[in-house]
Image (cartoon, rainbow, N blue to C red; front, side, top):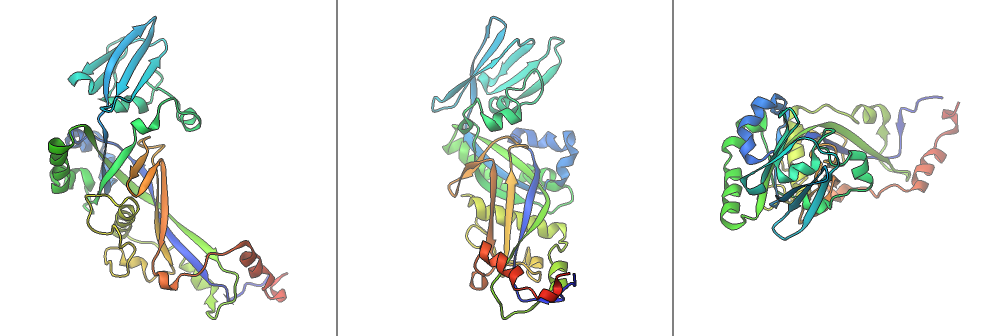
Length: 330
């Protein structure tokens, strides 16, 4: 089969940057996070999120089964049952924090009350991920996190050391909640964006523009530097969640006037987007006034709406093949 050097069917391409990992940290954990988890140096984007404060209000031993009741300020509660639990379950700060020790007094887990719902390990795991995906035994709304702010750092040492420990926006959010919303708990979520993907739509209608096939395929997956990818991830995530503490990008991404990710504009892209899945990482759904609560968030926007082509239909795709020169088929 001969390889055509050109074709008359325009290609609409969208560049997607994807979140590959994330961790959920209490603000009090930030100072020690980098020492204990040096891999966070490569987590340049972060979210600040909140949920109604969860606390453990009851711990009881029922014939060898451990029962733990977690409640939020609205009175919504869930009872966890650990069958045949052997070990120690300790509470701190009036049930806001817990520790779990085994029978040898070795600490297996610790954290805020909400973290008890997402722990791993045979002794402390509430529900295996696959089972939770199919039929969760806990109301997910108790764990949902509202995104308040999206920030980034291009520093080689990443978000935790360079930005978060003294970042004025985080301090502002903390102060606002101490003064005006004490019933919420705040979380910082460093994220790593290492996945990229190009989504292409081939349009079947005839076009006045004749494209060179080799040039199109060569431009399908260009390599962008780390700074460009971070800037793109930040701007797209802000546009997606529209967080109340952000000022830039909330309604303007993508824009040809933005210089931080301008390296993508010379490429053959019609759109830019972002995707993140928190089920396998922080195991909590994210939401905002602009997005309903979900583990998976993904969307894309057209770079220049005036030049957008209509989405292809099945007939359009079939038209591409029916319009080919018979001499190209071997």
